[in-house]
Image (cartoon, rainbow, N blue to C red; front, side, top):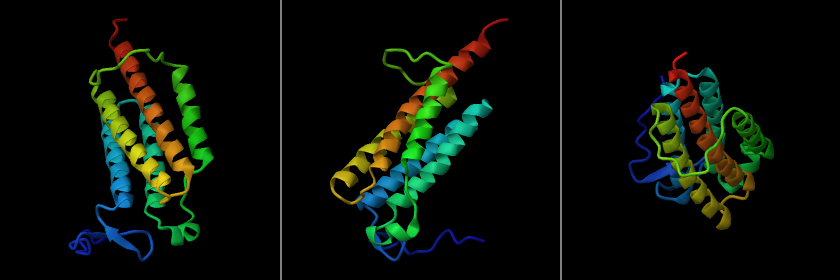
Amino acid sequence: MAKVTTGTGDTGYTGLLGAARVPKYDPRPDTFGTVDEATSALGLARAASKDQKVKNIIQQIQKELYLLMGELATPPENYEKMGLRMTAEHVQHLEQVEEELKQEVEIPNKFIIPGDTLDGAALDLARTVIRRAERMAVKLLHDGVIENTEVVRYLNRLSDLIFILARYIEVKSSLAELPE
């Protein structure tokens, strides 16, 4: 059985992948912790959704976000050994899914007030957390803490995709409510 409580964080430090330990408020764990929040919000959306296509898209994204968190948790001296990195292919996949969804739903040219459906609202919450993670990752990139620009590109595209996915869910939900 996995040991959940280790006590190693009781002094306010956390481990990166490798031997490095940093304060819990360090920009790295702050950023991957924010990505973890987004993953949990996506999990809420996945649990609330009745659409298997939506569930599959969200679960794939959650898996990719674990890869992204691993990359953020890898210090420069271990980066090449770990092999954890976001790639242009990850970004391209998001763009492909985005285009497929836009073929099925028209995106309104107006501000959206979240809350039409539970799963759509959970996705909108996840989107805002992803945007925060993106801002934090941009700072890491600009400060030279990370070098992979695909991390920022991925988070940027992901927030767009999640916005579209929320609208997709809401449109599908409203169509299901129409009388036959």
